[in-house]
Structures are given as structure tokens and as C-alpha cells.
Image (cartoon, rainbow over all chains, first blue to last red; front, side, top):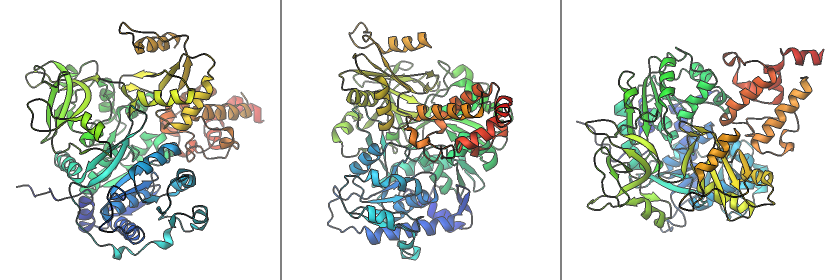
Length: 540
Length: 90
């Protein structure tokens, strides 16, 4: 009989592993290994410090002071301790990425309503700019900074705390966590130009981790890769599945990320998880030579369509690895369907050269529907709708968008999430295949990008009514980057490109801004995006 | 191509790709990765660019991640044994 895990929260697995074997290594980052015991001490100290300086009162309005703590940084012990510190405090965490433009980070921080931010060295460099114009009274905790006097004098309206201000870990007291409370709030690309905040509850991520821990039988000896930024929800898999099972997460530095082959070999990674684009990159850099990764026992891909050709190369490079393709939007908690690669059977099950997305996770239910949300016949193509324990509560402070995406199809008692993905569920047990998006969302090197958001930014920067963004160069999994087209004369396209680079995260910033005399139109009178892509293909 | 020209070509590529202002890479020892001027999203094209400057393939297995730290480390790792760069120095 399975233990009752329904009351668990995102921190539970880490705490159990820390109690079971405090000397085991929980994380390696920037050349430093931290045991579960050491990481717990740091996280509990962060939690106790946040409670002391950012006390909430029972009569606080949760819309004014939501139970969330932001974590601003990347690939550092401070960030890892900050995430766990937020959870130990009983908050959900909101990751903020120093690699993003500061305006975007400021907007996310403002919209989240967080009153406390844990900051690492990278984040600290941008803090003055990010907080420009923010309301006073934020608690800014830099747990690794010995001297914060200069920052404190530059930010006199906020409370700036450093390593010397940390409370003892013994002051942390565990309190209950509501399974329906937010475990993390992630902002994803939104078509109107504003990122959407996806709320993920403890019960959602607990259901996901339970399914994964059972499926993969993770052992304490396992070493997880972490190829994702914390603002990408797939990072939750690496950190929290490893900690759930007492295993180790090896977080590469920016330099190590440049050479993933060396990182896998030198860190002794046994469980690899990345977007397919990383595997494509490794293939292009001649890093998928046969037998290169004998230590990998599991290789998982998620975040974009997985080309069969890449899996075949990966299988040769990692001959002992079981390979699985995972699929899922952030709104359905990390991943919600999977397909195991079988070298004998799978090539015939691929469609358009892409690996199937397979079957739903335990407890998750699938509908494939037409435009009126009525189920299509078996073997027909339609939009994928899903529900189950991983269905998240919706978008942060955005009931309208939530109502549009989280729907009750005719004849159904339950709410389903509309993925916007076209799929086909085969007959006679054939796996589900992914056939593309219904809208203008694409994947750029695994990142989810709404072309509408780039277009909105381009219209604003160029001061024009129409801007069209397309994915380019195209890859089997999506695109490597984007190109923006403008048709108005007299615009300095170089200036627009520069402004977009400053405003958008690197993966969204267009590689090129081009001028066309007029936009090609299709038979419906809409801008013909395919014709614009053909233009790029013709020019090379 | 002499070493000075190589350094300039590397600087132009990185600045154009990142959209950063020239002051962020005014010196050859300024950090590239820590400042976010180069990321893993750029690595394939950057290596191809380096190969075009060298006119030969890079031995990926022989390089260490730290070579991407600055223009100085890039030149040292990828062009120190380049005949054209050596000629220019001698």
C-alpha cells in the first residue's frame, strides 16, 4: 500500500532526505558541494531571517502581501538556499533571472507582489536598476554577501541584509503548508506582450514528483544534470526529484554550460534532462560520438518537439541510457505525458520525424477536441486538453485569461486546460503524436515564445502598427531564433533590433529586424507568415 | 590574420550578438560569460565563427569551459598555435 502523500509539500522530500542522511551531497554548484545538512542549515537560516524581518500579520490582506518570496540569481548556493528558504518559511518562490532585461524582471517582481527577495552576487549587480521606482519597504537578503553597507546606502528605502544579519538556523520552526498554496509562481511568455504568471500548487507538484519518483526509481547515488534556468519549470524536476530521493544535483556554471559534454563526463551525471535543442547543439559540436556517455542511465527530453534523428544519435552516445520524451506545459506542472524510446519499435511510430509524446501520467486524463471542444473521433487530429492532479489553479491575478484557458468542455464535470497543441491519438494503442501549435507560439531552443509578445515589443519600439515575427532559422524542434519584419519606410531597423535586445530575454530577441516593402497576404487577407519564412529561405 | 585583428573580430561578433554597448567589452580581460555577453544559446555559432577565423576545426574535447571567460582566454586557447597569429607576434 502506498503511503499517503497528499499532505506533502514541495519541501517535504528535501527535509526527509536531510533527516535520513545529512552528510550526503545535495548539490554541487560553482565548484562547491553542499551536503543535505549544510544546505538545510543555510535554508533554515534564510527562512528564519525572512520571518524576522518580513513578518506577516494574520490580518494582512493576501492580495497586498501574498505568501511568496522572490529569488533573484542563478547557479549559486545563495539561490538554492533562497528557494528552499522560501519554502521552509511556508512561502512559494518566484524565480527572477539576472539574464533577463531589468525592465522585465522589475515587472515580474512588481506583479508578483513579493515583499522579500533573496539575492545572489549576480542579482546584486542589477538590484539598483531593478528596484528603480519600486515601492519602499522590500526586504532584500543577500545571504552570501559579507558587506552590504554600500548597497544599503544606495537603497535607503528598503531593508538590505547580508550574511552578518542571518538568524541562526535553530530559530526556524516548521509550520504547516496548505497543499493548495502556491509552491512556485513562474512567468511565461504571453501573447499580449505581458508575461503570464502560472501558479503551481504544492498538490500539483507533489503529484508530479510522486509519479516521477516511482517511475525512475531514483537512487541516492544518482547525479542529476541541471541544464535549465530557474525561470524554466523543468528546473523543478532536477532539484526536487533529486532531493526527494536523496540524490545530488550538479548545477553547471555558465562556462560549463558552453561545453555540456565535458560537464556530463566530469560531473558523473547519471540522469540527464534537457530540451532537445541542447542535444542538437551537442550533435553540431561533434559531442555525440558513440559511447561518449557510458555513465548515463536515464536521458529525458522535454520542452519542444523531439526529432527522432537526434534520439538515434543520443542512443549511440549514451548506450546504457533509457531515453524518454516528456511533454507538458507549465500549466500542467512540468510534464504530463511521456514516451519511452524503443529502437526497434519507435522509428515506425514517429510522425514528421518527431518522437511521439506518448501517454498521460498516472491520474491525468486526456481529451482531443475540435473547435467546439467536442471530442474528435479516434485517430483524428484535434487540440489536446488535459486534467488531473497536475492541473494548476490558473494565472496569477488574471481571471480572464484563466477562464479562457481553463475550461469545462460540454458534457464534462471537470475543468481541463487547453494546451493549444495539435495532437492525434492513434487507434489500437498507438501513442499520441504532437503535430504543432494552434497559435503563434513557438519554441526557440526549447523556450516557449509567443511571437505576439515579440511583435508587441517591436511595434512599440518602432512606433508602427504592424510588426511580424517568425521563427528563424527553423529546426526540426522549432527555431534557433526569430526574425522581425517591418514594412514602414524610414525606420532604422538596427535601432529597433538594439532596443529589442535590451528589452527581451536573449532567447526572444530577434536575430534580425528586416524591412519589406509590403507584407505578403494570404487568401484570408492575413499576413502570410509562410511567405515571409520563404523569403528568408530564398535569401539564405 | 594577425592577433590584433582576431581580437577585434571576436569583440565585434560578441557585441553584435549580445546587442551590448562597446563599453561592456572595452578590455580584453573583461568577463564575457559573467556579464551575459555570451550564453550557451550562442555556442554553436560562436564555435563555427572561431573555426572560420582559424580556418580549421576546433578540437572540442581538448578545450576547457574556462576558455570562454574573456577575449584573452579565447585568443590563448584557440589562436595561440595559429600559424598566422604566431607570425604576427614574431
